[in-house]
Image 1 (cartoon, rainbow, N blue to C red):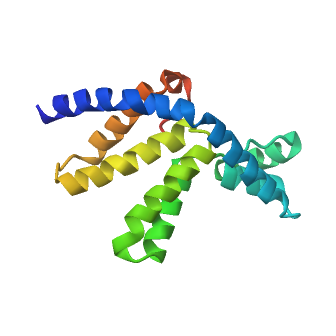
Image 2 (cartoon, one colour; image 1 turned 120 degrees about the horizontal axis):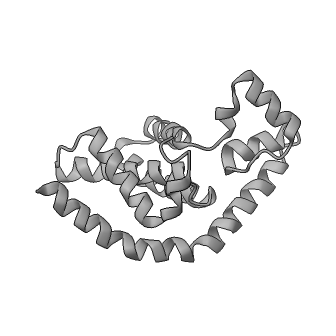
Length: 168
């Protein structure tokens, strides 16, 4: 029963968010461009820094082949793991009372900077649902939260269905 109610609320609440995401595209592009420009100031390995921090694709085919052959390409491809890393980092660094709010704001802007890529958006949505689950004492399992986040993302952008990286 609660799950049906939640899915109904989820569907209705995602409709205005879809418009917000569309309106944020110019900001998203500007943030990513700024991030990439800042990473170019790092004269040593600027392309790798831009890939890890800004979500920029690695354009150098030789460099990409090296990362693939050594098995470390996953470090340079933005995924939900990056968001989990930042979340843990802020939770360790900041006082408990403000850590959630500051982490949420940072992860939201990071999601925008990464142009709402499927795995980042799903992980951010899951982060929000985890907090709602905790605050409202809903006792949903991790698999429910992951499912809700996935459905939310598909409502947000049906093209995510074609993304191999949505579950990452």
